Image (cartoon, rainbow, N blue to C red):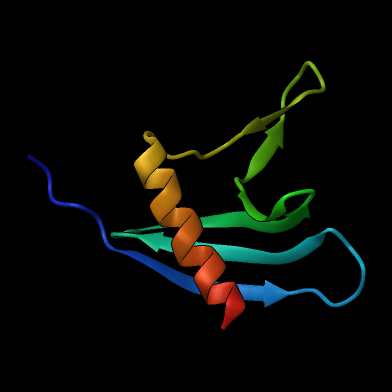
Length: 85
């Protein structure tokens, strides 16, 4: 069984104003760094949006995403707690 990678917020850039976009976030997952995560204000509160890239069909696709619901919940909790500090 593989050991769980350590999650760490390495950069959090907040935005002021009335925009729904509240912050850009970079996280370290073990020895890897993922850039371009976003904290967004939605209808039900803040949520973590994954980095996206535009496909040839004009649609936007996640460039990174957690493999399980538990991993997504752990990542969201870590990032949103760092934002609240």
